[in-house]
Length: 538
Image (tube, rainbow, N blue to C red; front, side):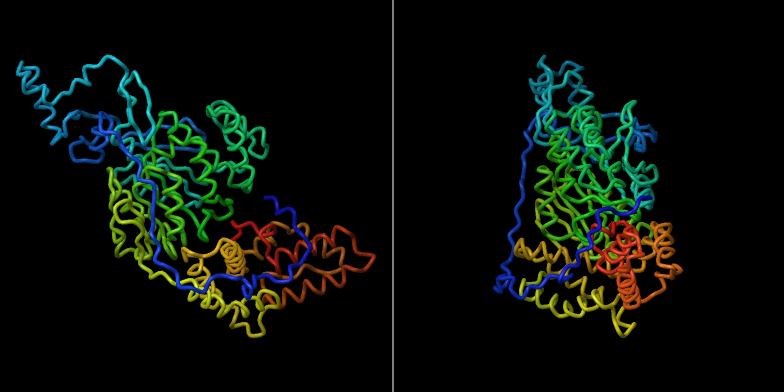
């Protein structure tokens, strides 16, 4: 595994931001009025067909399994097509009524049958299929998205336990296309018969062209890959491939799940890089018809359930009906997370405009669920704080946390995660304020990221020692010393040790390579900058 690049030796004057002159308003936050694009469905053939999605009138098909044709992606279907029939035209009552109408026509009772079958069925032109706000022409009626297609789930899981969550949904009868790290290729993806090197911009563009994109959108797709860590690019590429299939109608997805760790606006996996919600937004822009097909989204990750995140989802996916996420800590896959997803999958079958937030009641952290629906807007378990109140709670511990970050603590008991976790919760509460100014939000997000790294300092030190063991030995050999057990030191002891190395490294006998490595140690183990500490280390 390669270590982080581009570490700067510059030490910031303040690790955490100072808001004494932020100029943010102290007026209480007004009650937010949520809004979202409603979209529209044209009454007609497709609408009548889609309205039966997930209903008891559909005959349950038998189970089968098939490959997707994309390396690293497996799809298990709930079954091959069985009986699919619907009465089209006048508002249907039951499928049996439609069949009865057809039989009456066969028996010659056309007067009655004609009431059930509109003239549109006799038209000779290719059927017009309205799907999620996009119009398609098709000469093959079998290509229309059927009920089970629009219940199909596309799941991106950044953790190894994603397969547990996917299987929980499959056992309930749902069809899930899972993209997860078990077949991660870290830097390349295979599509068709070609292997694409995602470390190169031109290769990312070539993949976009292979997916049928025009040059501008192909370049935008390559930019999505370029802005993320190499370890997350293959997951992003496979997600793009799935979006492309939905875009051209090869395989339509009506539901989307993003699963992993999160601080609020990202989805990451242990030692697997991270993607940002902004990346999903860009994919929705590149593949607008695929995005228009998504009706239900689930963010199975901690701290992703803010009102702002839900509103963003309704902007990305203009025909979205429900979004669900954890407004606070989420559940691990084997600690209730898989059960939560299985319940969510059952609750969101069919075309729904309402979703009870209590669907996960009784599960570990099930009360932390927040939802946003067309019918009822945003709902969560926690009361919203006014901006001044949230900012005051954040300021309570800010100075102590900053002091600990820069110097460590004299009292080792302070280093327990309880204090840092309380401060982290205050940060998240502040970020949930819907009227937080943009400049303040950016500073608070930087503070959040740093506090997360402080909370997971031990994991960062272990990862640093593992990834740079050879560099450590070389540097300490140059210094005439033995590599210490850095992971066993307190933060204060580690800071003082690195400061000693910095003084010793001024000697002319010490190589420039060793000096640069000591700068890396400061950036990684003291300042813990985003450039030096990959998020997947924690």
